Image 1 (cartoon, one colour):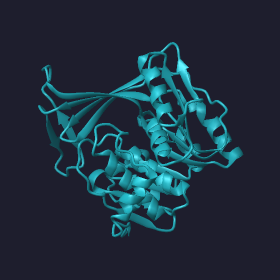
Image 2: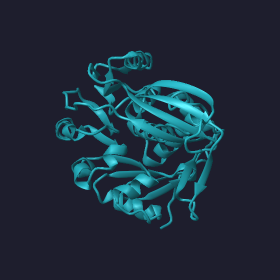
Image 3: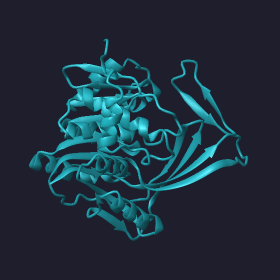
Length: 326
């Protein structure tokens, strides 16, 4: 039996670090825009290409680093990038038996514009023919970002969860968040843990104005998940398990680039639960994993091993979640 099976699209990330840009924010500083000169040539200070990324692959690699038995369900193209993804996953000890090769369409691709440590991501999903395929038992399933047509997998996913008793973690991607609420509703009703950032939480609730995190947590739990986690960038993370609500500031670390921060957090959180820890310790694992990732370019280089995780948190015994005031 696997500890966790990650389900979602896989991509290649190309990082472009730029200096000639600016950020313009609304008065309340909740909404900001990256601005570059229109119809101009913008110099790139540094370029990096990273294979086998995307929410699902990041979770699979992170879980494997934490010592969990891991597999990935995904689709790649029959191209150089697709072949490189297979090699990297095998190197990271992620089972690739359920990674399918699309002989018609290429591998998904993202361009990450990095400006002063923050990232803006241009995402391209190749058209896919999604269908549920039989997978073995696992203690956890991590269901995340997929493209148009992935709704065809929902029934198979739900039947698998009910049949095997696997705990379901959900981290919806861009396309999934743009579907109507009825599409995700059956999934959320069976979800053990839901991960979203603050902006995604407001999208799911169709409320662009609400900024009260305690209220957002409560509203999302009403959709079905037993545990809801909301990350809010540099402000920290919030969690609600139906009994208590908690807040944890970020674990300070030198920032190089923030791509994959949310994936690292979710992976650390689920990893802690898989090892039998409670929600408070899971928040610490999530934050520590995110702190490791932001110190490098890309979503995976800084992911922690279980030993590194335990060492980092042992050095910060005072770093604990607080009850969220409502």
